[in-house]
Length: 377
Image (cartoon, rainbow, N blue to C red; front, side):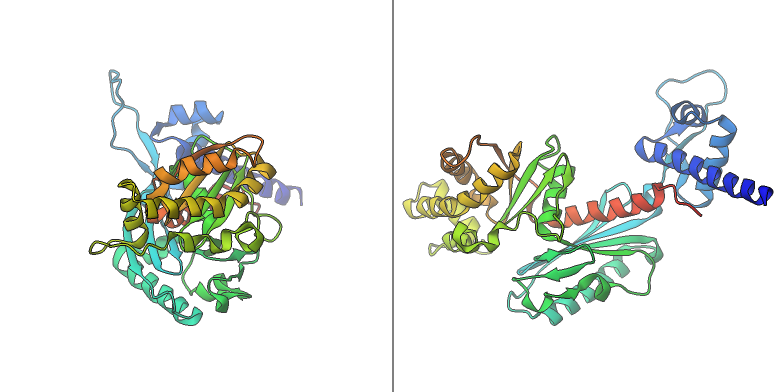
């Protein structure tokens, strides 16, 4: 019994050591065995054994990159985390468009697919479209399908911890576990998350909020919705509905998109909001009035969140960002009498990929949790 327990302890210790080394290489690569030993506090033979195991699993490889400082004699071998060892898929399926991103384990986007969607498409047909587009995209872009370790799909609706969706935008999806319906027989996780929650993850990772911890993200365009991070962590609430102020008619967010309708001329291929922004840039009074109306409609909801959370930063993302340079000063003006402090307001630079980038980040988080966790046998 004692020998069995000791063997169990040794296995757990080896697993822990291997996880520590992988975490160190994931954080910074390439590194020599000596650097890994010094950084982890493990002995060199222990580090060497861990690197050998990780190399067999395809997660670590020898780096051809040479150190800037050459020393006499044979150069030390340097090892790196192999970002190319796997892939994640980030997807955004909204009312009007779908965006798919394939990224490696380092977060580098390798391939992109985008297509417009008929806003009148039903929930079942929309789900079939997503399934077919995803499979076609992965067949064309992922060299090894088994290496797609996680997928995350952003949807316009509240998503609870079990993956069940409540959606006013696609009513047929309400009460449906989309994660279960999107799974296939291939390995890897399938995650579903609210689109504006993913948008704020994207802003914290690569966008306007990389240096801020308490952030309110306002998704604007065909609908207005909000999400927030507190202390740098996504705050979903108990059932995933934190920040959904757009559902309160009294706040005006639910009809705010109507202010962005533009009856003026549009160039070939130009969106309605882009045409409105172009007109506002020329000081067209109708366009400026439309942007002011939009600011009036969304300001009360943003003020409510600002008073509740007192964020460092408000990020405006989504379809209305083309009018952002006119919208930001108007919002600041309207928030001033409504709040104790007007937070800094920034415009997203991630464009229409923002939600899909956040989906990549959430999928990577799941993969890293699996790879870097010290799991008991």
